[in-house]
Image 1 (cartoon, helix red, strand yellow):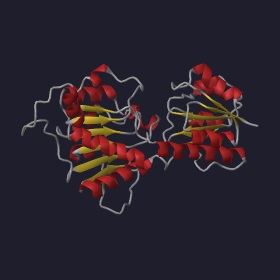
Image 2 (image 1 turned 180 degrees about the horizontal axis):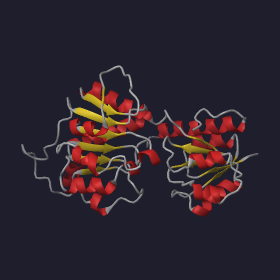
Image 3 (image 1 turned 30 degrees about the horizontal axis):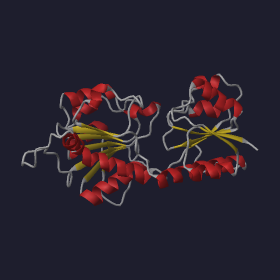
Length: 316
């Protein structure tokens, strides 16, 4: 029976489905694989169900020749922690789990939009600290989001799901930047990235991670944003120049930010954690049991297809 390494613990449904196909080893630790563990994964197992932070880089692949593992089934839609080209050159298939994460991630984007615009995080901290003295007309005045303009950077599945919620749920005007034009069932205007920054009341970043989008959002983009505008990131942390964002928030050059991802996860800079105009979530994008089960079952189906000699449905 082929050997499968599952690099983090998953819901029982996923593990049982994998055990029906493989001799399964489930790693108990929650931190990413170390370099030694990465090399062992490639040399001692036929397949790996991997996830965020397991850095299968060119250096790791170069140190293992040839790898025993022939598939890395990534749990998650983002795969910037895997050098897909290096894997492909060494005969290793890489898959991911798109679709299953779309609505859950879009929901977290809207959570951050509302929390940032309405200063919900700041208000909760005030109340928990015992500093709330009662309602008054000028307390914690935020931005009313209904009817505002949302600018979406990256109009893939998740970007479109966010746009749909903004348009139908909050009557927002939708503008977007994307490599290609997208046709949707509601009005949405495509424009250049810096034009979007100038026009949007709310910016939501929903692009894939990787070399092409590293620091896509930097000081120039943030300087183009309106002083009242809010910046939301649910994509990958390194899409944003984190230092530039922190500086913009410290100097109140934008209205606020809502983040679910960080440039050097799990490290979140102290400067960022001290800011009242930043809402910070611990990468909750897909954190719902049914969503995680759906992602796991999609990963298992990719593994099943590969085991049976078929092309996996979500091959990268």
